[in-house]
Image 1: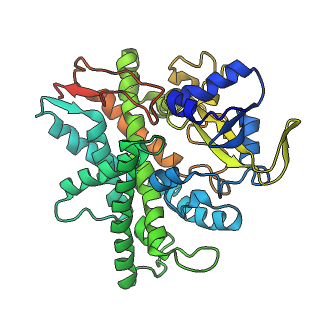
Image 2 (image 1 turned 90 degrees about the vertical axis):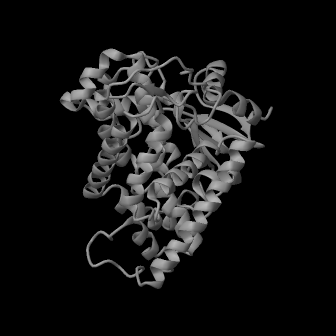
Image 3 (image 1 turned 120 degrees about the horizontal axis):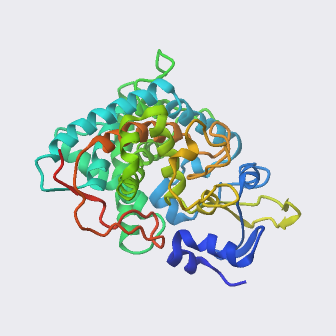
Amino acid sequence: MVDNTLPFLTQGYAWLPDLSRRKGPGPVRTRLLGKPAIALRGPAAVAFFYDENHVRRRTALPEPVLSTLFGKGAVHTLDGPEHRRRKALFVSLLKDASGVAMLARLVAEEWERSSKEWTGRPQVTLFDEVSVLITRAVCAWAGVPLGDRPDDEARRTARDLVAMVDGFATAGPRHWQARRARRRQEKRLARLVEEIRSAGGDAPADSDRPASAVQAVAAHRDADGELLDPHTAAVEILNVIRPTAAITWYAVFGAHALHRNPGLRERLATDSEGYARAFAHELRRFYPFAPFVAGLAPDDVQWRGEAIPEGTLVLLDLYGQNHDPELWHDPYMFDPDRFLGREPGRDELVPQGGGEAAEGHRCPGEDITLAVLSTLLPRLARLQYQVPEQDLRIPLSRMPTGPRSGFVISEVH
């Protein structure tokens, strides 16, 4: 069977859905990264994929992804009790309702500050500015200091966080920039962890919730009872702040959706009936972010009578599932009303994966993503601006993708 790594890298998000259409209903067998692979989609496939008896993650993530997006030694590379113990740290931080609300408030404050500054500029690239304001907010929330010149440091940090996401699925300059960005931030945060521990900040907090995410990571003990080494602690701090900065992509997709569907602006601006949350769900369904997630079959297993030999790469087709006409009416139409008054099923909407957040590999930061988007989107809808001529195409061959121009606005008031 021909290896499809090159077609995947050149076709991007379209590769697996196109392959599925050509091969017909059911699982799709192929080769990827030199391994035999099988691609699945649908809610039942999500449940199958996140069962550790069927799929393991420990050795599935390729080195280029670890060296850019997740970091070596990250929670994403663990399975079993080790994974559950480390994952509990993230769940305690990212699914705490008061903590999520605090971060949303900080994002709102940074938006108000930033949008006032935009009024004095001839043009603003929304992607760049939103990445900085979210970075300022999440660093303040997580306890990551921005130094004596916080605005300059926020921009440098935002560039690094964006680079880590932007370079994980490509070769060439973007990839090497992502590696350099990760090395810079890991060294900086490892020093911060050592400073906190030297000052006694690795002791358990008196309250149920530590003063900051950084302190929680510095004090965390893994399943073996040992503190994380400073490098691994830095990796996990980045796995708190980097995904939060990545919400920038969805915020800019929100601007793109409003530009293409101006009739939705008034409802979003007033956020009647929780429209902002429904809008955020539809952004995550409609626009491309992660193409698929992957794991390895730990033993010979079966999916609906299909044999999956040990060591097979199992792909869960996220982009394909989020545009599957059997799950979504008119899937290529942007329609927030499909989520108005209802939350999507656990394994139905899978922009970044499915399963359980507490026990499985599902991203525990979804509550933060929805809270930040529900904070930013109505403010974006209320902002008055012009959209000058620019390239707003969103190429599916680029991962991660977004409007080519970064979404430029002018005459902000």
